Structures are given as structure tokens and as C-alpha cells.
Length: 427
Figure 1 (cartoon, rainbow, N blue to C red):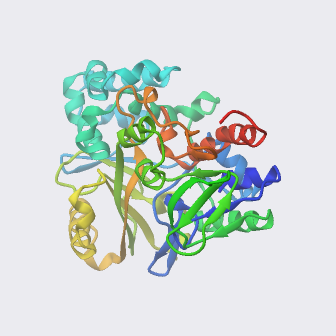
Figure 2: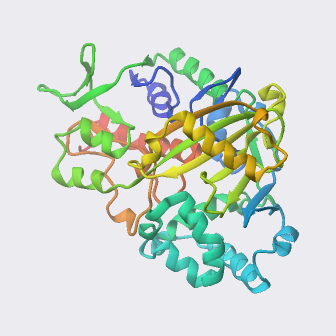
Figure 3: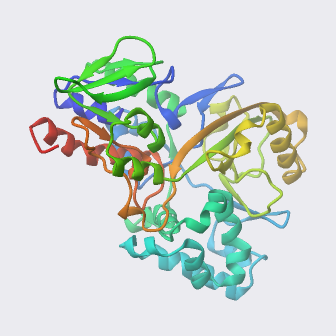
């Protein structure tokens, strides 16, 4: 959507092709009972410069509500607050030495400016070295497994650097604390406004249109063949699809390009949205280290967004990050509801089954590309060997975390190359 907006601003005629019946991808909204909100959890940071700039263009930046949130930590069956330095010092599961080494690890990582050397180091080895084995086993390893599964063994230390760097981004600009924000109405409102802007700029939006093949045309340009309906002819095409999907749609890519696309490892997500009659503990994020809990974290969105956004009720996300072929994708919704709600009630004894008002599950197999060892040396090219065909997706986020601001950055950084190609630059 950002690319379409920018290209239209340069006078290009743009056709935006979307398989779903709505825009937004992972940022799309849906209905949970009678509440319309984001399908997955999102937050705006003060340091999200590109996202905030786009929202300013859409007339929405002034609507952002900024909030200081709290953080929880669930370990050994106990929920702790980890929202400030004093609570960190009081955190019982770690001794004084462990806390000091954990704090030193985070502080050191936050001061690294060039993470490329971290790409050659395994994240587990790096964290053991800096935090110590005991702290690694107690804190880091459960969190790595929750986010990465067994793939943590192939993930570089740049992963933890990117996570900490995003957390410390506001402090680098002189702010003492990062603030979290949201637009009232969530991404449903943002996407509605963005869609109207695109239409006003002359962008043609084709929803419910799945591409089956993308290839150079016999006499130049690109032909996008949908699964139904007539082909779409264009001067050039940008595929913003996950790497394996892009490879399937462009079988004419060079062998090396297909190899690079196939080499990208993804984590998917099974994410439950739960509407509750009452609040939980008031933590926006609760990290979890206990292995019996079937989800990765508890995201209490109503600890960030006013509960009036949800009709006075509480919206909670229960994400579980898994590989694309994990058996969890095949588990029926009803069984997932029993597993997830059972664990939630065990974690929060004040909650009863009757407090669960609505439950809905999202499943996405390709959410973010894992920053495997030496990732920047072999990630897929953006400009392909096929004339007029470009790739741009989350696999091109190098040494960063997947969030809306980073996806906008991809579009902004790709724009000059696309315009240069239009002007006759080398393919």
C-alpha cells in the first residue's frame, strides 16, 4: 500500500492486486464478537518515524493516543511485574549476580551500532557468554524457544540485538521512556483511510484476486496471470509475498534466486484473540517461561487501548509462534480454545470460563523470516533476473524486527530503485 501510494505520487498508474477480500495483510482487522479490531497485536512507538510520518499524511497522527504501559513476567507459576528498575531488582527468580549480568547484556546490546558481526554468532552462544549459563537457562532459553522454537539454534545474535534496539530506540532520541500508542479504531480505521487515499490517487485495487503466475511478457513488460479472470499487463511488478510464495509464482527465476528464496526460514503464528468480561493484570505484555503454557505470551491490548474501544471489555491476544509446518496449524479451533483458555484460567485464577465472551484464531504460516547465521550474505535480491519483476517482503528486513514501521521502511528504500528502473536504469 505504501509503494502504491508513493508510485502514484510520481504519476505512475498502479494496480494493487490482493488475494484476500480486504487490505492490510498481517495488519488487517476482523470481527471478534461485536468488536472490530486488529487480527494480530500491533503498537505504535514514538520512535516509529516512518509510520508516524505516513499517518501524518493520512491525517491520523494527531489522533494517536500515547500510553505508558506495564510489563509482566510469568515464571514458575507466579506472575511478577517487571515494569521498572526497582521491580527488576526485586525479581526473585534471579539472584543479584544474574540480574546484573542480564542488565549488562541488555545495556551492551543497546550500545552496539553495527550488528553485522553478530550475524556470525549463534544467539544462544552470545547470550550464554554475556548473561551466564544460569540466567540463560532460566530466562533467555524459554523466551527463545517461545519465539523461535528449535530454530533458535540456527538464529544469529542479531535477532536479540534487533529486539533490544527497537526497545531502546526512543532513548536514543533523548526520551527517558518509550511510549506506546494506537489510533482509536485500530488498523481498521487506518486501512480504511489509506484505501480511500489510494483510490483518490487513482490506484486500482483488485481484492479477491489471487495470482497464479508472474512472468515477463513476450513483447516486454510483465504479465500477471490470476487464478481466474483475464491476465493483467504491466510495465513492471513488485511481489510483496513471502519468499516461498514468490518462488512458486515466478518459476522462471534463475536457479540461484530460487535457491536463496528457498533458503529463507520462516516462523508462522497461531494467534488467538480473546474477548473477556473483565481485565487480567493490567500488563500490556506478559512474557512466559513456563513450558506448560501453550502460548508464547499474553498481550492484554486493553491495558494499552481504552476499554471503550472494546465496549468496556478486555481484549487479549494469545500468540504461539511455530514453524510453517507445525501440527498446531491443523488443530481445530474448538480444541485450541480449550487448550488456550484452560491455560489462561490457570494463570489467572480470578478468571472464570464464563468471562470468556468470544474466541477466534488466526493462522499465518509465513510471518517473519528468521535471521539465521550470516543472513545478510544470502538473503534474496530485490531486483530479479526477470525483466520488470521485483521482490519485496519481510525477508528483506535485515537486522531488524518485523513491525509496521519496518515494512514501510522497505517500501521507502525500494522506491528510488523502482523509479530508476522506470527511467531506463539497468535491470
